[in-house]
Image 1 (cartoon, rainbow, N blue to C red):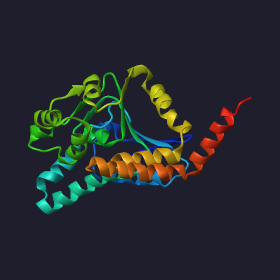
Image 2: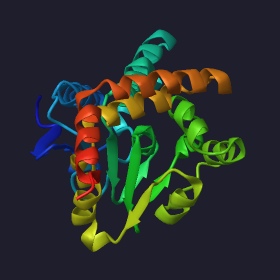
Image 3: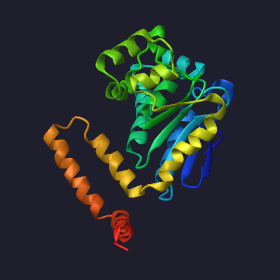
Length: 256
C-alpha cells in the first residue's frame, strides 16, 4: 500500500492518515489510489465499526497538487474524463462502505480536500480548521462533490459555496450542516477518539443497515421511503444483534 496512507487500528476503529505533509496532503493519483485501496481493505474487515480519515502535518488536505493541475491542463477531454471518474469512484466507495467513514479535519480542507471531507459520513473539525471550494477562482468546478454538497445544504447555500469559492471556518461549516462537531485544537485527537468510540458500543449490523437505508432513500418518494424503511426494519429484527439485544433487555426488565 506504499507510504501515501498510514494505517492504524485502535480496537474496532481504523485510522487512515493522508501522508504527504510536505505537500499539505495534496491529492495526486498515488494518494487517491492508496486511499481507495485502504478503504476497500477496511470495508472487508468485519471487526471494524468505523473508519477515520485524517491528515499528517499541519493540514487535512489542500486539494490537488501542482503536478495534478499541470496534468489536467495538458490532457484531452477523454483523459480528463477518465481522471474525473477515478476521483468520483473514491466518493462512491466512501458512500458504499458499510460502516461510518469519518473525516477528522484540522488545518485546511480546501478544494478536493474539502470535497473529500464533505464526502465522508461525518465530519469532525478543530476550531481553527478552514474549509472552501475555491475551484472557480482558476476556472475549475467542484463538480463531483456537488452531488454530495447539494444533499448536505440548501440549494442557495450550495450555489453560494461553489460559485464564490471563499474560505470559511469550522463554526460556519457546522452552521451550514457540513461539520457535525467542532472541538478545541489542543484536545482534538482525544476528542475524536472519544467521539468515534461510541461506534464500538452499538450494534454493527444496525449501523450497516442504518447507513444503507439513509443513502438508499435519496431520490425516493415518501411512500417508497416508508416501504424501504419497513424492509430494513424487518431485516434488523432478523439479525443476531437484535435478537440478543432484545433478550438482554427482556432479562433486565423481568420483575425481581
